[in-house]
Image (tube, rainbow, N blue to C red):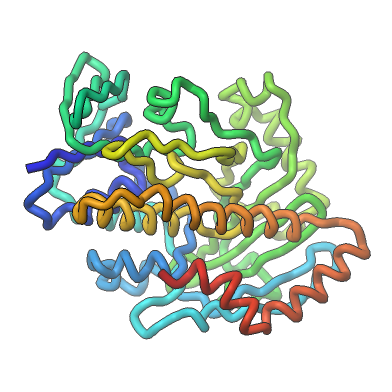
Amino acid sequence: MKKVAIIGAGISGLFVANLFKENLNYQVTIYEKNNLINLDEGYGIQLSTNSIKLLNEIGFNTLEKKDRFNPEKIDFYEIKQKKKICDLNIAKFNSENCKYTTLRRSRLVEFLKDRLDNNVIKYDHSIENIEKKNNQINLTFNKNIKVICDYLVISDGVFSKCKSLISNDEIKPAYNNSIAIRGNISRNNLNNLNEKNISLYMGQDFHYVIYPVNNNNEVFNFIGVLKHELTTNELDNYSLFKEEAFIQSIKDKLKDKISTTILDNLNSMKYFPVFVSKGYLEPGNNIFLVGDAFFAFPPSFAQGASQSIEGGYELFNNIVNNKSNFYNNRVKKVKMINSRSRLNQFAFHVSNPITVFFRNISLKILTKNKTFLENYLGKIYKN
């Protein structure tokens, strides 16, 4: 029996463990540095059909309908003019049992966690050393805990300690000169939007997205991305995003970008610096990186969670079928999504009136062009 060690109990790590669950040729253990998996956060995620199809293979389609939502379109708005530009029919990529889905991230994590046996996840295990000997990997955790495995799956996020250990800190994420603002807002405080759709608002150096996270449509998820430069000292200050003066400075910048009705009624707000990957790490035949540990995208194409799932599925098939093309295939897809994510963020944040005019005209045309949509979205949404 081959032993698979997974570092990190996020979406990608939990999904990979679920895939190995029924395969008796492998024994899987997840090592999580925290003492629990936090299921309190109610922030939303979007899952396109490429990931829903894979999740359905482990029973996601049995999740209660009240806990998830299937938006029909993406509505594009211009913040300054307070008007709708056009809409994009994302339901055209759906099938009967595989539909674009929004839900709370914690609900997906809970679903993945509950399908695993209690002894699969080992908490309070912080990785300290990774050493490869022949075809086996020796892991050392805090308290001098030693583990030997045949395969190592690294899924401990954008600031992956495992990645730092095996690359000698050569590959680090880069600050994207932007801040993500997350929160929740009641439906009662939202006007002039279609609650069946995802609403995307574009403005100068800023965009935000609002969408429901379940079928009761009472609470909507809010995610905004604000262009904001930080000094090296500010980036090294880990408490900066909890300091009242800094938070107030961000809110002051948002006053000209979000309506008072929305800004004053956002709940559970949190602020995060956006870090993205600038390169890839391919460590060897039996060490693999998935999710943000492999590559973190700008948050403007809503593919972070979906690619964590898709990458985990490719990795599982690579291992059980004894293939060696995981990184080749993954890099091709990641490059495609990264270029779209960067283009989206640029388009969402333009401010020059002439550029805005042509962007809006282009959106009206392209969102109805079947050939463009099949190329731009179809190649991503269809496995």
